Length: 213
Image 1 (cartoon, rainbow, N blue to C red):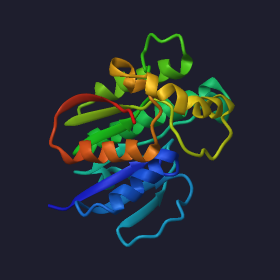
Image 2 (image 1 turned 90 degrees about the horizontal axis):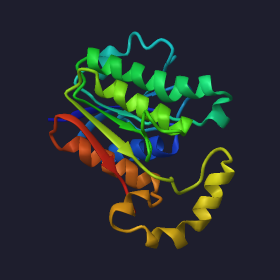
Image 3 (image 1 turned 90 degrees about the vertical axis):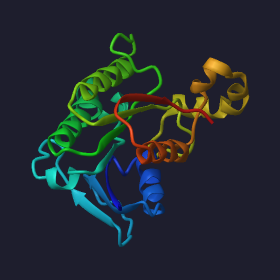
């Protein structure tokens, strides 16, 4: 049976890779993207929907029986404040998950971050942890949480600390073995591939996935 995918956050590094991966996969007949601005991609199986994430009413029909992928995410620096950062990384993600639960989506797959924890001293990881907790509490058939480490590749915005870490990655990555391998930097395409593979396999409950190159 052909399946439907809905991607939220398709303009980001992982989201764009996810769109390409799903469009190349014959198991998914239709790919819907919920975006705030056009994705500038054309494919007969792709449908773009410009939405207001402050008001997701009306998206239920798209989410019904769909595999819902959420790649929403920003930083406090890019968002402009702690409040704005939390709105995107927590409020919008939970709102999409709530709509997915109401619409009886097949499953919800979300990108979080390595170190996500409600008790983390890092604001970034703390918000990610709270988002994971709130999404996991919803009535969804399956929730897949992906916790990538540093993402390799180009960013649309400047992130000086990440740029330094990327330059060090070839030296540091080989040293991260065993239980530390989950901290290795990973390319967005690998995250997208793992998300699609997880979606393909029937599952239930909450599952946490770590990634490593």
